[in-house]
Length: 240
Image (tube, rainbow, N blue to C red; front, side):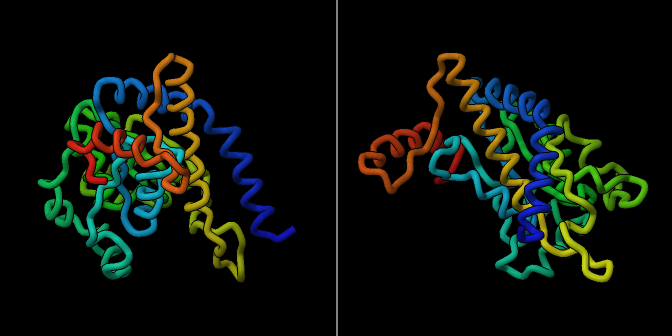
């Protein structure tokens, strides 16, 4: 078997075994917050932002999902500069005033290492707003070997109320070449955990007799009217 397939399959099995309780807990809180009129907001910088955008406007996915867009933290505007910005203790103030995080929301912060300044800043802002704050990260990065770069000394998991642990090894590589990790796993596992969590939210709603807000594929005939109704319901909070 291809070495990557073998290793990613093994990691997926580990995550499925270890993260069931976290997925259940977080899904239950999301359902509760959605019932109060909240939405799910996702934040990440660099490649973590790609994970934040994956569930947005997604066929078969939850409708009330909003990625927090900060273009100067995204790859297309300069990947190396985005990486620098994420570690800058002054950078969050450039966009903090544009955030619309409310007490009824869930905010998921995506950062594999959990140590950089801006994701931790956003977690603090979300927590102060009364939102339920979740991190999607790897706890293989730990305080003793990868200390926080935040002025508080706290890592991301110290600020959030729940963690979705990707179990990705330090360096984000499943394979090694002369000591250098390669074949990244965080994108695959991060997306898997988010879709598993949101799918469980939908399942819980169905079990409770609640019609879940789900986007239908735009490639299915007759889906437009349904999707337009969904968009209208959440358009005051989310720009679709």
